[in-house]
Image 1 (cartoon, rainbow, N blue to C red):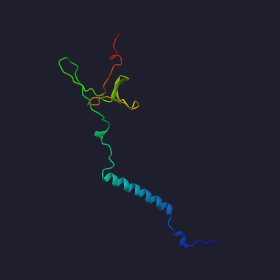
Image 2 (cartoon, rainbow, N blue to C red; image 1 turned 45 degrees about the vertical axis):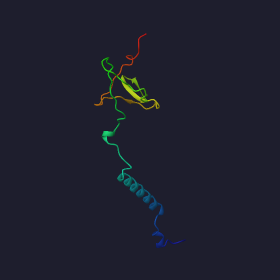
Image 3 (cartoon, rainbow, N blue to C red; image 1 turned 90 degrees about the horizontal axis):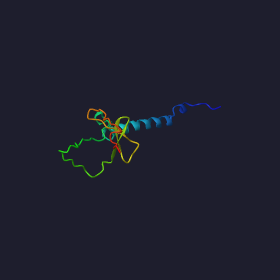
Image 4 (cartoon, rainbow, N blue to C red; image 1 turned 90 degrees about the vertical axis):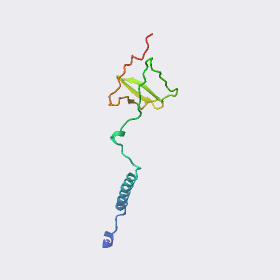
Length: 115
């Protein structure tokens, strides 16, 4: 039978100290990136505004000029609200709201022409 000597009990646990060093390294890295501005957390003012729109009047007394370029977005009516999505990504859509976060309502049958 072998006896345990006091030197065997004083050996450091390399796996434990490697894990603690890794965790400390990750924490220091995140704090340094935050300090130098590479990590930024979203603020309330930045939460979800993707684009801003304006309404052009179709009255005959106003001359309306519209660009010939496409906006890259398309609108559609779903459950009584006007939704907007990019033309290249059909899976992402957002509800169109006013500057006071009130949804813009729509009527699906309004845009259809009568035969």
